[in-house]
Length: 292
Image 1 (cartoon, rainbow, N blue to C red):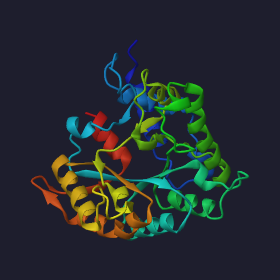
Image 2: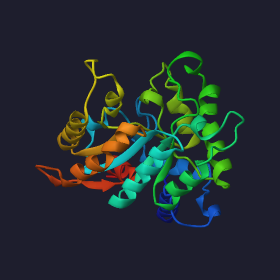
Image 3: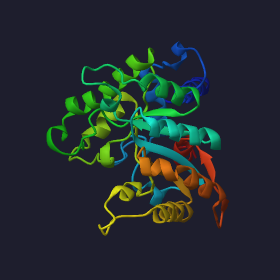
């Protein structure tokens, strides 16, 4: 049955707020009921009967072929741990006035007894206070299309929920993790169980459209797939220009931290036939994809 207009406006307004957990507010304001986030997810999905694999709102690995992100760029950083590299990345982003999503691996933030690592609270607090977003990159960082995770909703749910519990315990309040990035971007199981789990939770699958290949800098120089500093910068810039923006995949690696400032500087100065680029949030990118 068609909703009355005032009800629709209320849902959209509430859901928009739910997508901004970084707002500076009292801790209780970070909590939004799951059902509110589900309303936004449902409102952004395509017409009923959308085919798999895209049965949940989010960023998919082939979106660069199908959507125009209008030279908007969202920065995302994977494999985060509470160390000097995460701190340095925050410093660089703060200097440049750019917001990012920090996709954390749960086990990196606790010791063998399950207690928060020494800098865990400090750095997660900084992410929130400085206007960034904490993203969920699983607890153990294992591929979710293989082994015991393959089409196992209980195992997949636990990977997601264990990170949420760790974040809440570390921060001391509930911070809703609404963006989930599977390790290696792998979500394509026979029944797309991970997508179904995220849909039920009212969360968003968040892969990328611009691949920096920054992990190739860590490979031995003798390997044919090794990439140096200049090639990683050039490849990232070329993709951004060719694809008119999108979601950039970076990692919290020492080599990436070493080039992050230069990469952001070059992206800010780059242009294509549509003009220059705008650093946006992941929420902005999702709106460009779904809100017409």
